[in-house]
Every structure is written in C-alpha cells, then in structure tokens.
Length: 217
Image 1 (cartoon, rainbow, N blue to C red):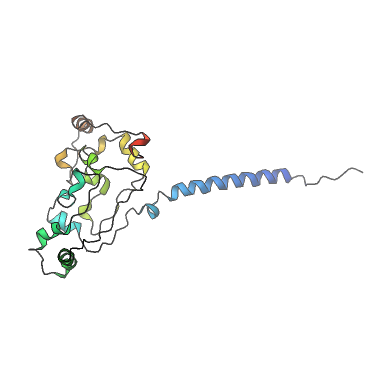
Image 2: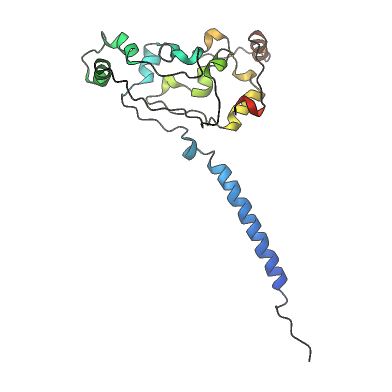
C-alpha cells in the first residue's frame, strides 16, 4: 500500500508565500523606519519652540530691522551662532519697554546674574560636526537653513537638517550662495544669471567636500 504524502499538495506554495510575506514585511518595516526618522514628527521640523521669554522675531527683525549678527554674534566667528547674553537685550530694553511685564524676565535675569535658559531650536546629533562660521563666510545665507525667521512669532526648525539635506547642498551649493553683504538679508533674491552662484563660489573659494570626515570627525 503506497505511503500517503506527509503534506498536502499545496504545502510548498504556502511555504513560499509565507517566506515571501515575511521577507516583504521585514523590508517594509526597515523602509518605514528610514522614512519615519525623516518626518517632522522626529526631526521637529515646523514645530514652534516655546521659549522662557516671548521673543517675537517678527517684531525685532521684521519691524525693527535688527540684524541676525547683532544677537547671534558667533555666527561669523565660531562653530556656534550662540544666543545673545542678557546684557545685549538690555542695551535696548534698559530704555525701551523697561517697565513692561513682557520684558520682566529679561530684567530679572540681568539683575540676578542668571542667564536666560533659552531652548535650542536647531539641534544636530553629537556625532555630527558643523561649523557655523565656515558656512556664512562662504556665502550661505541665514535663510537657507533657518527659513524666514523674520516671519516667525516663535522660531521653529525650517529645514530637516538631516544628512540628505546637507549633502544635497554640498553636492550643488551654487543655488544657495550669495554675496557676504547679503548673508543676513531675509528678502534677498539672486539675479537672473544662471552662473551667478558659480561666480560667488569662485570669488569666495568655495570647495564643498562630501567625504565622511567632513561631518563625522
């Protein structure tokens, strides 16, 4: 009497389908993870950051015309743009709105000697090296990475600031280059010259690198 098959005829097909679904599921899970970490939910992009003092950039930059470098003086000389010391705030507010409740925390910090605990808006991972000064001194304007800060009530991260974003600019920096006297100009637009960016690159000796050591030291 012939021995019956241990598995039904369609068993091989079922196994193949299960293995294919398992492989597809693993691939989709990995892909979803890569996509997820690039979404604003993870990067914090477009999420206004609440600060200890309600500092409105629309008023200070847009209305009063205060230059970015006045408050963020380290942007042109240091790897870090920095935040202004309270003394810099009091240069104006010792005379302007010096009794307003809106500037009460500024006066308190100044007279107590305790700095204002500003919250960081643009945060790169610790394994990424970034020098702020080299970028602005090579023609990259503030608005390229930080967006129209002059239109933000509360500052937010405008760009994803991930590896793809940085490499995209390093591989083709020319659309993002501008004259050094227009670095902090939020409304500046390049002239209709397709070679303008390359001319700026030549004038400022721009040679962006894409090797790993540039950002991971």
